[in-house]
Image (cartoon, rainbow, N blue to C red; front, side):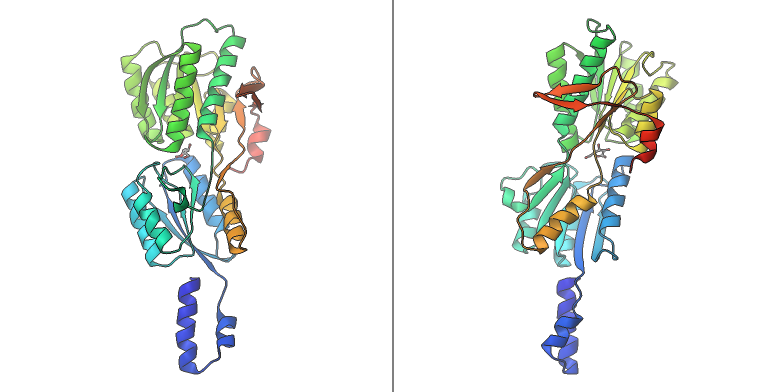
Amino acid sequence: MKKKMVTALLAVSMLAGLSAVNVMAADDDTITVGFSQVGAESDWRTANTESMKSTFSEDNGYELIFDDAQQKQENQLTAIRNFIQQEVDYIVLAPVTETGWDTVLQEAKDAGIPVIIVDRMVDVSDDSLYTAWVGSNFKLEGQKAMAWLDAYLEAKGRGDEEINLVDIQGTIGASAQIGRTEGLEEAAKEYGWNIVAQQTGEFTQAKGQEVMESMLKQHDNINVVYCENDNEAFGAIDAIEAAGKTVGPDGDILVMSFDTTNAGLTDTLSGKIICDTECNPLHGPRVEEIIKKLEDGKDVEKKAYVEEEMFAYDDTVKSVKVDDKDYDVTKITQEILDKRAY
Ligand code: AHR
């Protein structure tokens, strides 16, 4: 840890009668980063943790203090306060939900520690409480997925069919849930689709399965399931199949998902997931770029959205349009899957 190391070296060298020049030469350039991670709820999260850990490695000149909050905001607040006490050089926060951060971020600001927000967003009264944010445009993800569904149904001659959709939401209050749910609700209104049920699956496979089981018991007319991440989709597919129904292009139910993890795209290849919209988890190098700029005294972008792709089982829909911008849809193949980084 830079600051503590210098203090310790000063004390030792004063005792030993060494000069200040020797002290500075002995200081190392290790940058200490405290990272408060949401948890390990999904394949996406595992890929994200791996990206952060491999970027902020000792070999790359960092000391990473990693904290897994097990999806609880109170654990994240404790972790940040510990990082402040430890006098880390940077705090990186992947917030579980958007609200509730003002006080602790003010404490970090008072301690002079820059905070970088990653993945989901924080909703704070004063945006000087964080230095930079990098992550996904979650609403756009939802809008792209819904534009795809509309185009797909039209192309398949199902444009006039009654669509009874269920939404297995993410963790309520997380940007990924808020944005994706908004994208769905706006499209349902626009296209006249029925949202017959909405419930959180907390971004996990187990909860996704449980929620889908109960939705299937209550509604026998579901023809689209909108899962707000891949792990919920895996659980939903298990529940649908266990109930004797089928998924896929010719099945009873179309399953839509987000993340495009390796397992998610494997299910897209078979058609179990009909369309998977990317949420890119490889934020380690992006956060490092911000830290490097700050170290060099350069300006950083306050908010940066990452570019994301879309993948589908087939090429029925080749692109979608949202707010006058076109986004390509790629038909997934084994070759594409094999080359992907996560
Ligand atoms: O915030 C990103 C979301 O969090 C991903 O879609 C989900 O898989 C993860 O848990």
